[in-house]
Image 1 (tube, rainbow, N blue to C red):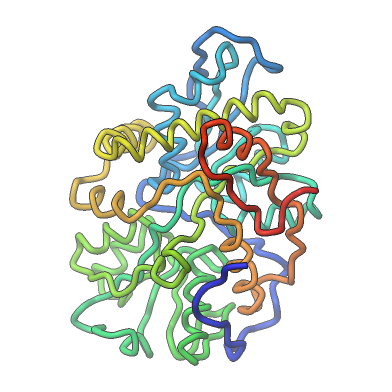
Image 2: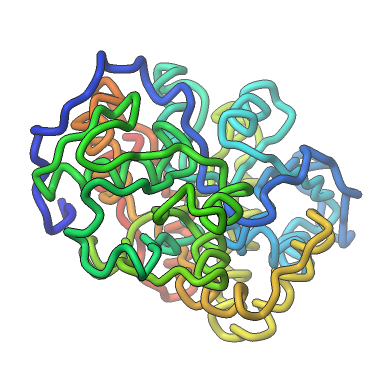
Length: 369
């Protein structure tokens, strides 16, 4: 099973292990402050599936471009025929998982940490990961006047979005690889890890209260537009420069009761990803238009362009990297060793990919039998 090129050193000092990632968020970015909202259902008419409506949840973030573009352009709705798409947007992974468990949404786009948390807290009963959506889009950006090399981070104040979230775990793991010590819970140690909401991190950086941040796009590019420099792209730490940033999940109940609808949504996401990768500029504009509708704020070109370039849209859930991220959280003392067997059901996706003559994707041994 592929794993990051570096090997986890368990010298990181941690407080008492926290019970799962109770505070984990999915990767949040600039513009992620939209309140949860329902937008108008959309149907293209035509074939009848097993339910009249499918409720899809996602974030108003570029790392959720498959949902932004697929819904904005009607590509997902086209595959559903007379079944309406009812979209909802969320601020944080935990609230989306709660909505999935409550039946308020059926399918969601979400980051790896809340996917792991939701699955383990339910003892493997709540969700399945059924596909990939995005890879990469996370950077360590710093004040170039204070930090010129990775070794200069020692003694500095570096932000992550939240204790236990995907980027926080990645940064703690990177710190441990350097042989430095940080108390995972407090963030105190050889580097000061400051948990800061992505919405306020740029202003905190401008005020001088932060020396840098390990954050997802487009927050990273927003900081660069304020004078920060990219010191490290997290993708360079992973095999083939890829790691999961956004998954597609489904309620196990909905998957059992409406497999035809799940398959139709997946055909829509596969077609959306194909269109995005073939029409990058149009897709970027579409995603930005969707962000403006959802959050009331489009991204300026100096933020949008580099952020978009750093995100790879993919059908592959990159399962081995999710497993590695879980092990990094365990090593940092933020997660009890999870049993992730059964978290994936990639049979519907692989059926679609095979029919199109595309390569099937792996569940890294974590799929349903």
